[in-house]
Image (cartoon, rainbow, N blue to C red; front, side, top):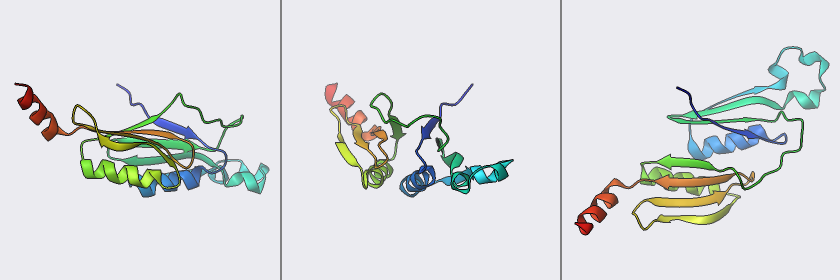
Length: 146
């Protein structure tokens, strides 16, 4: 059995982005810089601040990031980060926090089946999807159909 983890690549601003995500989502953040790696004496000082690996962990959520890439980072629309939660107030807080400096592309709102859904692009260009299953609403819809 494995675990699927979201792993983000940045252009030198990994620490800033991961600290922002920690402020938005909570959890424990650990970052390892190039300067903390073995054999860093041979590297330029500017490079030592880059993040080799960052881990943000909260409950079942795991978000990782790095500044280490051999190519330019290009943001596209083929990958999204889905934040699924059963706590309505928590999902609303996550949405509010992550939209700061970003663009709300689909406000968090009730769907026709009773769940909450929304989308946004954060200030780092990452696309987020938000989903909250609302048990009470689903139960009420089922009763109305019977």
